[in-house]
Length: 227
Image 1: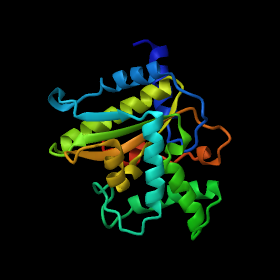
Image 2: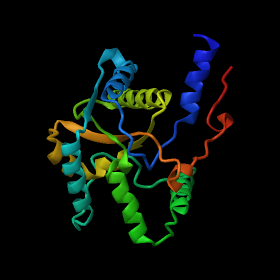
Image 3: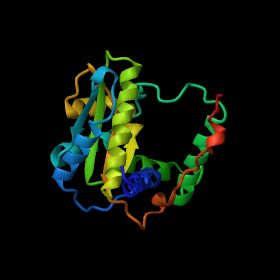
């Protein structure tokens, strides 16, 4: 690989971050297909390739979003499809999660206790933040944690490939909390776990939410150099 190619890869990795407001500019379906082809080059144990991906067309997406927003007002308790976070989050993870959350809400002008503001942001999340491309990812329920690792590699490869093509993205775990609605509207069988969605498109440069740049720990904070 040439130095220029390596620099392009580094730029795509370093510039990628979660975007929470998109321009309506359409994305060429051929490019979406190419990104998926590239993502499928991600490594997987014994080449199992356990990822399952659904690209949502306009009618399906509109129906899904309407149902999801309606579910926001349903007082019935929602059960997560899987546990993303432990029941009790300890340090340093608790502080990191709180900081990025309040940094985001600060940019949006949503103060603590502003339930209407928080609901607006949740609704935006359920609407894929207005991105022109909406994806939903699942994995077979009978697979083990290794296949989830493989799926994570697929997702990251897709996000970096998109960034390399000047497209922004946001992986969205929120759909796992509404898996019943997602499953019903997208005809996803019980044999698959609703893992996350991905919003894909061009970032809105004027949106306050897109000024969020989460802090990253220095290498020394998580790396041990063993001789």
